[in-house]
Image 1 (cartoon, rainbow, N blue to C red):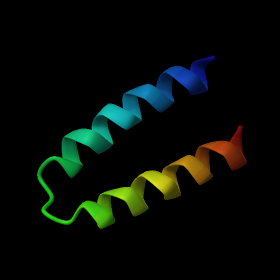
Image 2: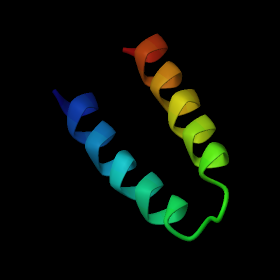
Image 3: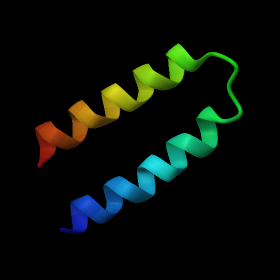
Image 4: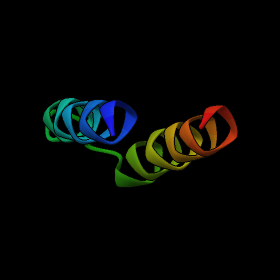
Length: 42
Protein backbone atom coordinates (compact mmCIF):
# COMPACT_ATOMS: atom_id res chain seq x y z
CA UNK A 1 0.00 0.00 0.00
CA UNK A 2 2.91 2.31 0.77
CA UNK A 3 4.30 1.68 -2.70
CA UNK A 4 0.93 2.57 -4.20
CA UNK A 5 0.84 5.89 -2.32
CA UNK A 6 4.43 6.65 -3.30
CA UNK A 7 3.51 5.78 -6.88
CA UNK A 8 0.79 8.45 -6.93
CA UNK A 9 3.13 11.04 -5.41
CA UNK A 10 5.74 10.25 -8.04
CA UNK A 11 3.15 10.47 -10.82
CA UNK A 12 2.21 13.99 -9.70
CA UNK A 13 5.94 14.79 -9.65
CA UNK A 14 6.35 13.47 -13.21
CA UNK A 15 3.30 15.42 -14.41
CA UNK A 16 4.74 18.58 -12.83
CA UNK A 17 8.06 18.08 -14.65
CA UNK A 18 6.47 17.02 -17.93
CA UNK A 19 4.24 20.10 -17.93
CA UNK A 20 7.42 22.14 -18.38
CA UNK A 21 8.70 19.98 -21.25
CA UNK A 22 7.84 20.65 -24.87
CA UNK A 23 8.47 17.05 -25.94
CA UNK A 24 5.56 14.84 -24.88
CA UNK A 25 7.30 11.69 -26.13
CA UNK A 26 10.12 12.21 -23.63
CA UNK A 27 7.53 12.49 -20.87
CA UNK A 28 5.88 9.24 -21.97
CA UNK A 29 9.24 7.46 -21.94
CA UNK A 30 9.92 8.65 -18.38
CA UNK A 31 6.52 7.44 -17.19
CA UNK A 32 6.86 4.06 -18.89
CA UNK A 33 10.34 3.58 -17.41
CA UNK A 34 9.01 4.49 -13.96
CA UNK A 35 6.09 2.06 -14.31
CA UNK A 36 8.50 -0.73 -15.27
CA UNK A 37 10.68 0.13 -12.27
CA UNK A 38 7.74 0.06 -9.84
CA UNK A 39 6.35 -3.21 -11.21
CA UNK A 40 9.73 -4.93 -11.09
CA UNK A 41 10.35 -3.78 -7.51
CA UNK A 42 6.89 -4.53 -6.14
